[in-house]
Image 1 (tube, helix red, strand yellow):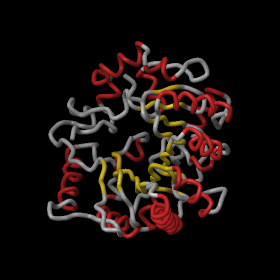
Image 2 (cartoon, helix red, strand yellow):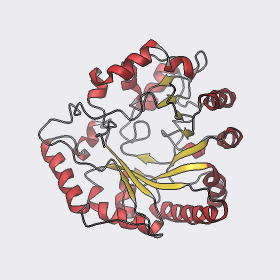
Image 3 (cartoon, one colour):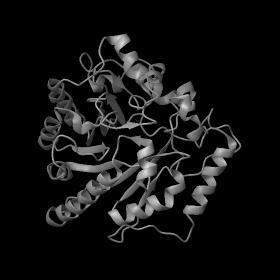
Length: 343
């Protein structure tokens, strides 16, 4: 039985106009692009436009519902983004977009009017309720411009829904850090005023020693701090609503195990949200089972390349089925910050 419902295309991972401190590629602490050049002779990978047609055709055959353009780098900088829009319309596949909210290359109005009608969700990366906090994490960003663009998006979304009955969720996405979560309650209030549907967060992938101190998972004291923060903000009597009176949804805001060294091991009962449901295709065509950091993904196996293998062949391969059944025994999966506590 095929449960594949979403594909992520890493269309242009080296293209970004921000420099977030936690980013595997674009952080000032990263040496990724130098390593990439040493290994491949290129500083920049871009998915060729002709691949998009065959990828979308197979996605349609497999019943894929959503396409995520690159989550590494800024997807709206991809020069063939309009082709993705066209193919989504052709095959009835929705875009699930993660963007830094800068709306490059076109006017914000052009982007909003293009994306909202075909998007299931627009996730805006935002890491603070104040310019000082957010811009210290998302270097080169402009917080006030981001806020303006988010507000214009939700207003257009509401107008479009009234006319068409088609609804696009708008999400604020952030990283849980020791230097931004002191503003969590203010971030929620900001989201409420902006008409946000959901706030989605992730704990930090510690790619660099320089940011290890920002992780809530690094030691018992940090995990206790995180749990106390959640208890303070999410009191039982509190219900956070957006400007239309609908409750804001929260994703991944759950307590961490305190006594176990969770920086080394995830509780065995926590599940992978990706296997058998999603696949990733890199700008070079490499097919991957999840969004773990590039180097670490290699430990999960070789799942082929879209130039030589179909997605269906990957899903039915022995290597992939072995991973889906036994991933909790893989060293990478034992420490993966993306695994989720069962609901």
